[in-house]
Length: 280
Ligand SMILES: C[S@@+](CC[C@H](N)C(=O)[O-])C[C@H]1O[C@@H](n2cnc3c(N)ncnc32)[C@H](O)[C@@H]1O
Image (tube, rainbow, N blue to C red; front, side):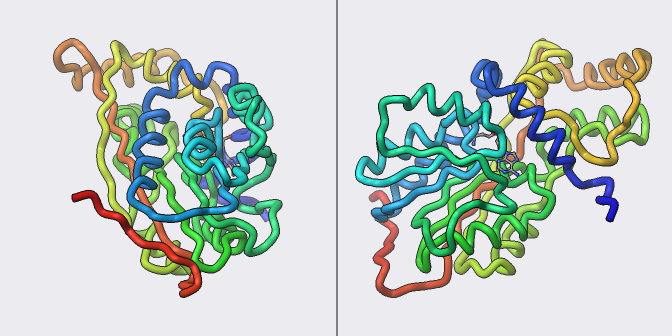
């Protein structure tokens, strides 16, 4: 059956991330910041997970924190792109508590009820079906286990989407799911007590070419089935760039990233002690 236009082409997406792995850290400033804001949330959770999964580990921003935060735990770095895992392996080569798994979060090669905590930063938005990924997270989590994740919301990349829309009707920029729908998908997948929030982080760039270069460097190509299959003409690109210039302020161009944060629990289990330790 043919996949819909808005579906991510997984073969292309994996290829893009494989290619991006070596240079990822040079351009992934926003991703590093989001990963650190995500794992900071673990400061307020009194949990002692035996097995932790970093789902969509990339070059290991979360995994690096997790192995230090939980020195007695086994951490599994999972990614669809082997080259990303190689980067994480290189950074954490002396750590015995981490293992590596090349797998798709929509079909995780792990046993049911085998994980206590899943952390996943900026990965589920690359899935075709949030529900499928969340159902997989729920399947591999032990009862009482916790999922903590980030994804992009609809306002991420909105300036770029707006400018391309002024130029043609093609799909140049991925679109992202509203956090309320993400919360619904969590409930439908069997999670309890989902907590969702979002914030917009604005990154500034010197020009549009830097924006496009950075997105390409981290592997964030448009890999939707419905993308334009021929090269974008020079005239259309120039028109988009001119449109983007209307956003220029203080000699820089802004790009908004709406970050959606979520956490939820696999079905309640009284024998697992989990409490929030709110700071005074
Ligand atoms: C934007 S990067 C984020 C990486 C890392 N979590 C971080 O915060 O820097 C997205 C990562 O998800 C991986 N990825 C994309 N789709 C995936 C899928 N379906 N299953 C597993 N990993 C996937 C990519 O290979 C890439 O490493």
